[in-house]
Length: 278
Image (cartoon, rainbow, N blue to C red; front, side, top):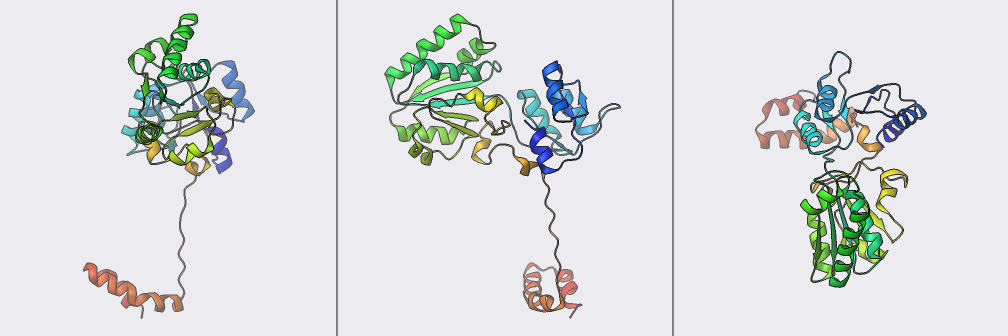
């Protein structure tokens, strides 16, 4: 999820961390030719990457999602080590006026099982659909515990009935969810959405496909950050450096403007560095 865009961007050294690297993860690391995997996780892994230890080298930038402790630690160390984006506890909203309650409930529970503070919401204009999804959530939870889903649906999750589709979209744009599902598949609805980490369009766009296989990177902004930026991409691994070459002819064209602006700011040494070259 983070190694591939790093490789596309040309990153030479990649260090992966995981507290319990199972055979599947190590096989994936081998497939991607990753040679460094540290058996550490949580806030302590972020600190180790940011400052280095005897066995873990200090890195230039930290990438990847995590729980609220990982996210908080990334923000704390960001003054000393660059980070990608706040990608904390999972958020998911399904916006639907109609649809299969069974499928909608399943999508909500898929994200709710991540952690006890994972937030899953249905936003709808239909009271009938709201009740149907509520029944389905209860039924699916009774059939299987689904990790933390039982806790998070009671502590954080909700079904919200909006007065209109316009009001629903206003709420979503303010919330700026990490995941947004539009099971109706109406592309016109996309024009009203301005803030979401990733959008699943259509009834077959099950959210776990985005987690694993559909191609879009799944390190996504949470806690309202989708109002400011999108998900992780190869561009996050690239640093741009500008190079300015100015000829004598170009200097003479720019000098008057530079001197004028320097004088306006009262920076006479700036003006002198230009004037002395005339």
